[in-house]
Length: 115
Image (tube, rainbow, N blue to C red):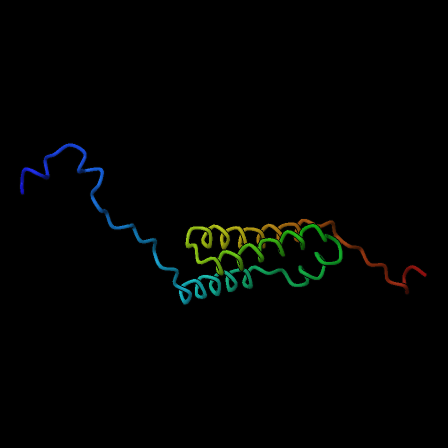
């Protein structure tokens, strides 16, 4: 039998077990999302989302798309796509906060001083 293993062409017919992709861990994914949300909450500028909804609809649309991508990646159970989508989601919110923080100052006039 040892002679059969040296025959040419048998190597191509060897049965090789399929590589298993890593299992998608829903609990770990939920923890990662929770950690990301906690980080974003700690950086959230008060009134930021309200201002963005009123003044920068394009930013809000981008945030909604990032959230949809994250939801789709979690449902698809692809670890690499989920990780990329979570990073995109986090970076999108950080950028939205930067947009809010970079807005021009608002000067409110007091009616008593300026009738």
